Structure formats: structure tokens, C-alpha cells
Image (cartoon, rainbow, N blue to C red; front, side, top):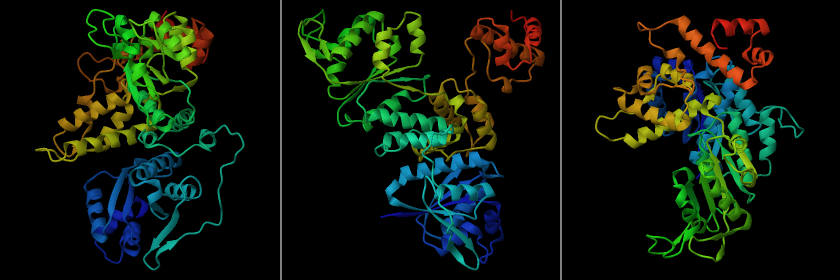
Length: 502
């Protein structure tokens, strides 16, 4: 059975209709749900207060329907880009939950600011075809027909939106695992498109990215979308295997091969036979073990410890590293031939601090899971974020990425005394952030205690970036001035002298 879904932006006029209690003026959304039967209303809202919750309850009283709410603070005004990105994120999430083939979408054209109306029109004619409707007290609900059709040109373009669309043309249907990668930024659109292309080709893949960026999530999605989806997926943390046990862990051993080997054992290559072997933290493998791993991948054979007989193996290798493997190659800590064998397909995952547009949808998803997990426990109240709490989460650099974000929200939700997670709850749940140079990066959140000094703080930041620039440029002052945004060589020399960064 198809779901008839209304997408609308909650505006002040809608809240006014609730407050006035005028049955002749229900507001744009109220008019829509009373004049046409919808199973779901997807409410994009810039509000997060008691009035919003009262409005949702009132809307449910007008018609029997399910309300799905998405917090979208940018709908105040004409911030088109962010409005567009957040709306696309909400539509994707709804399609994932209800099933893309099981919904009929209607966009309420006269709900929200002008940027919202433009977004509804653009989406309905491009990547999310939908019925455009508008409401009025006299006519009720009317379908709006636009006298134009839009298309995405197939010619090469510098814009990443067109590049992503071009990349995704001709791909198989997206697997649920890729849909579980919550995101809103264009960088992730492009990486997911690359991953989907790699998935259908049975080649090795190397995924690089900081801890907590979702490397295993991508690996599982690639496996599930590929030709080996009905075979095993075996994940191995290479950093946790003692050097002396690497060979037996990967290749297995025969009975009596060494003291304590009371029975034969299959290694990870045999366990993953026909499927995918995921090598997490592959950069931590000792050099000698890298040689044996390379031979197994190249020849497609392994030899158990204690045996002289080779065995054929058929596995797809997906490897992950939280360091730059090419840097380790240059330092002699990782074999260049193994790197090129693994990196036939290559994905570089960006840290959360470089994709701020993903923070809101990810935090909302995390909090929703926490609310479901703790629902029904004594004293638990369903939580939501205050506006200031969201602002702080956007300011934090999240060195631990999504894993740190998830743990922080969990702590804050448990410690929050009421229904609202306030900025102080988030601040208390955060760990202090210190870089390798010792610089605390939460500079906007320092306490005004007796030891606070603004000149000292400015000097700390200046020294940090001056030294980084010096290391990156090899001491070339012209390039240093350029990357630091300083006007000339002389200004740089003055800064170096002032902040003792020489």
C-alpha cells in the first residue's frame, strides 16, 4: 500500500492558526490535511519549543496521520543552498524509512520562505519528482502545474552536483547499507557514488580516513552491493594481532604445528572464502607479515602454518587505514607493492570537521536512536536539543568524528535533567581537545578564570599555525605568508619575531 506523504515547511502563520483557534483559518498545512487524505506529513521546522509540539498534536487531531519532523533552522530567510541541502537530506531519510517505491510525494508550495518554494519547484522537476500543491481557504488544495521542465546537462561541469549525477548514472539500485550512511554534504554524495561504482567491480579497495569516519560502514556497504553479497564478510583488526600470530590468524594452521595447536584451524582467508576479507588498520601490520599477505593476494593461494601444501583461496580484499599509507611507504614502514595491490579502488573519507553540513542530520539520527533505546526506562524523558546546544556541536572540531559525537550525545542525554539537552549538558559531556602540539582547539570555550589571558591565547594560536606553516613549506617564507593569508614577506617576519616562532 502506497503512503501519501505531504512535505511542508512549518511557518509562523501555521503556529498563529493554532493560537487563534479559528476553524475558518487552519493555515496552509492545516488546510492541506483537511482537504486531502495524507498518511504522513513530513514537517520541516525551524522551531524547537512547546508551541511546535502543540502544533504537531493539533495537526494529528485534524486528520489521522503520522507526523515526521525534521529540524531545519535555515528556513528563516533566503539561505537557498542550506535550505536545499537540508530538504534533500530529509527526503532521502523519509524514502529510506518508507521505501522509495511505496510513497507518493506532494510538496506544499506555499509553505515557508521564498527559498523553500524555490526548493520545492527545483526538486519536483529534477531529482525528486513530486506533485506540487498549494492551499487556500476558498479553493482548498490545488495542483500546481509549472510551464517548464528542467534537466541536468550531460556536458562536463565544474559543479560537484553535476559531477555526482554524472557518476551515478547507470548504477544499480542503491543498497540499504549505503542509505544508512547519514549525510547532507556534497563531498559525501561524491564518495558514495564512487563507492557504489567500486562495489559492482570485484576489485580490491583501500579506504583511508580518521578513526570514526565510517570506514567499516563503507566496507560493508560495498560488500553488500557487490557480486559477493551472499557470501561471508570477515572483519579483521590488523592492529590487534601480535606479530608472531599474524600468519596463523590469516592462513590457519595444522594440528601440532606448534605448542598448543591441539587441532587444525582455518584462518581468516578460508573463513572469508567466496566473500570479502576486511583488513582494518592494515597499516599496523609488520613488514614481514606484509610480504606474506601480498603473496597470498597476488597468487590467490595460502599455506597453513605447519603445512607444505598450498590451498586456493578466493576472497575480495577491502582494506582500511586511519593513517596516510603513502606517507608510511615513504618512511619505509609499508610496502609500496602492497599499497598498489590494495589501492586498485581508493576512497578517502573526510573528517566530520570538514563536512559541517552533516552534523545536524547525524546528531538527529543519533538522538532518535538514544530516545528509542531508553524509552520506557524509569525517569526517562524523550530528549531534544536546544538551539545553543546545536551551535556548540557545530563549533567543536570532533577529532574522534562520528564515534566521539555519538558518545558525547549519549552522555549529554543521560545527564540532561529535563526534556531539553542544553548547551551546558553538551559542554560537560565534551572531552578537552588537544592537538599533537598541545594546543587546545576549543579556544572559543575557554573559561574566564584567574589564569585567562587573551594576549596569551592569541600568541598560542599564532605560534601553532606559524610552526605548522614552516613545517609544511620547509621554511619558504614567501609560501608561508601566502598560506597564512599575510600580505607580504615582511609582515610574516614581524609575526615570527613577535610570537617567537623561529
